[in-house]
Image 1 (cartoon, rainbow, N blue to C red):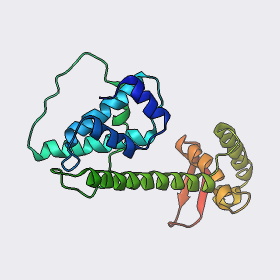
Image 2 (cartoon, rainbow, N blue to C red):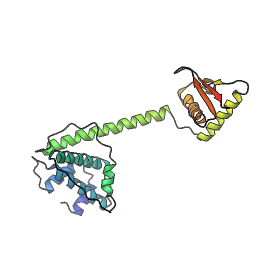
Image 3 (cartoon, rainbow, N blue to C red):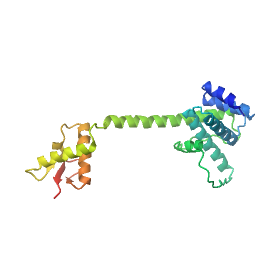
Length: 227
């Protein structure tokens, strides 16, 4: 096991997670031709806890790798058909376990590798593939979020102010008629303007202040004040 000073020196050099795993295998004198995944997962987690206690920053990639190793450890235990009973404790949950629990489940299931007699190279390659899958999934979420933000920009006006302004506009328009088309409440028929008008309109309908009617899907929406 690395001493605190050795661990500090290692983290200061900003190692890759591969470097840390190779270091653990060497320090724990594991057989590189037959890696004990359970022991490796436990030791990797111990190192993360020590890094946390030393007030060193834990790279996000290390947390993800720890979560993947714990998933592999779980698969090994299931394969061995062993049941592990964790006794209840009055102590607060370990902070590191709380962090790992927040990592999204790795779905769809990763391509399995043999869980017994796994070489160090096989394990690192499998971890790289799992890491890349998760990174692509995170990047897809970011792209979707950016696309939504571009398509539906957050309006600067307060929603309550927009609702009151639209209600005043509807009251004025319905002074002499029974109903009005939604399209007439939109300043310009563009995606942004449609969304900005539709959201407060739905709020007014939900509050029971107006009645919305649409003859057919994708046809004009008629707006009417509730009596």
